[in-house]
Image (cartoon, rainbow, N blue to C red):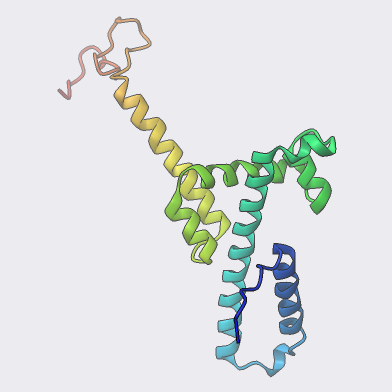
Length: 170
C-alpha cells in the first residue's frame, strides 16, 4: 500500500473551515458555559482575532507586492481591498502600511502577531516605537543641533542660555 501526499487545500478552503468552526462555537448557548469556560472563550477569541488579523495583513502585503490593483483597475491596493471588504480606503491603507513593515522587518513582532500572542493595536505601538527610535538614532548620529538663535545667547548643545543674572546650571 502506498501513501500519497495530498495537495495543500487552497487558503480559502481553510478559511471556510475556520468560519464553520466559529459558526459552530457561536451556536453554543453562552448560558451553558461555566465561568471558567467563559474566561477561556474570551481568551481564545482574542487569540483567533489576532491570528486572523495577522493573516489579513500577510495577504494584503502580498497583494500590494503583486500590484493586483493594477490588474483590476483600482487606484491602489487600499481601494482594491476596500472594494472587497466594505472597509474604508484609509483603514486599509494603514493596514497595508503595517503589513509591509511586518514583511520587511519586525520579525519577532510578526511572529507574535501570527501566533495570537499580541493584537493589532499592540503591533502598531511596537512598530511606531521602533520607527521613532530609529529616527531618534539618526538625529543623534547627525550630532547636536545648533541653537535657533543663530549663536546669539544659545549653548553649543542647543539649549537656551540662562537669563542674565540667573544661576548657571553648568
